[in-house]
Amino acid sequence: MIKKPNCKDGKHWSTDDIYAFIENKFVKGYAITIVSGDIHKEIGLKDNHPMVCGAMKKLRKKYSSKEISTTNSEQSSTITVEYFL
Image (cartoon, rainbow, N blue to C red; front, side):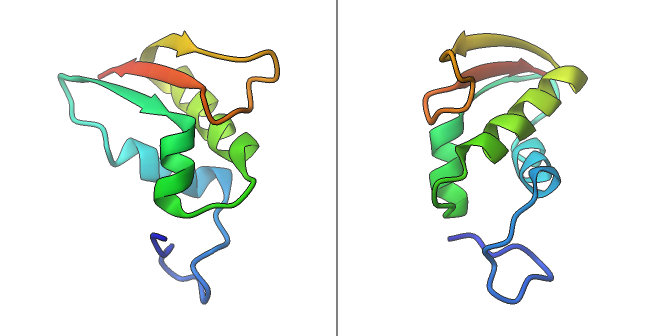
């Protein structure tokens, strides 16, 4: 589990924290493909896919992107988005 700064147990992530975590993976001039389940696992969350998907959706408003894979709920571990930076 990646510990969130300023959090005693490292487990309390907000959508904005996850947004920043994902955005820190971006490199200008490149495209990056993000899978919600990979971020969920990397951070060490448990049953919090809606929060990860919410952060990914918020990033889509800021960056050009292409939805690669989605589900009806739009809140699963298989949501995949390619971001163009």
